[in-house]
Length: 102
Picture (cartoon, rainbow, N blue to C red):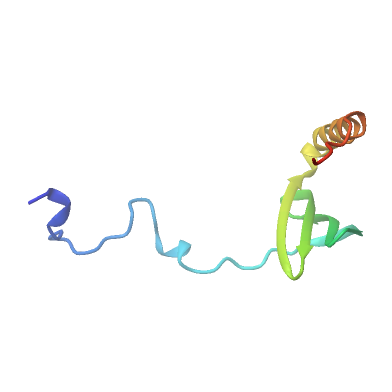
């Protein structure tokens, strides 16, 4: 018999390092909205919301496509680097010719 097929004499135990506080839902954190903008691109709606909570400021980008939402959160400490990369992508997209389908 393989060792992991035998039942433990201790019964089912939680993973080491887990405690009961993880099973309880976290209380909501107070977030203040500093600025919000919405744009529609084709079938997608993007909401850019600059928020602040006790841990600091952050940008929340939410993509909504027919009710399905995905969110990315960027801490304010990374916004300049994020902007730099987006600017590079915009420039690259403008510099490259569109591929023609045959």
